[in-house]
Image (tube, rainbow, N blue to C red; front, side, top):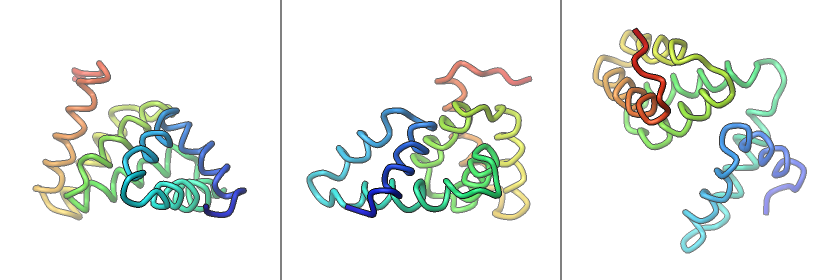
Length: 130
């Protein structure tokens, strides 16, 4: 397992987004590569997202931006949109970040991102925004 302190920090940070996320990660990879869940918890959440310098909401908006720009990460994008809502990001902030990606990543990436956001917003009961 990854360094225990980083792992515990990551577990706490990940739990802010979704209290069940670590359990789901572990279950997803248990039969093929259980270490992957430990690495995800320890490095991105325990090392990077736990740093000072940016608040967690800003970090989640940056993550949503990057996943939107990549254009092929809809399951991860949906999870981070749900988490961003859970930690206090406003739906309109999420929409604006995704819309901005039309400029930098292209309309197809923004369309895919907005479609994912719409699905999450519908599931969370936050539509209509207008």
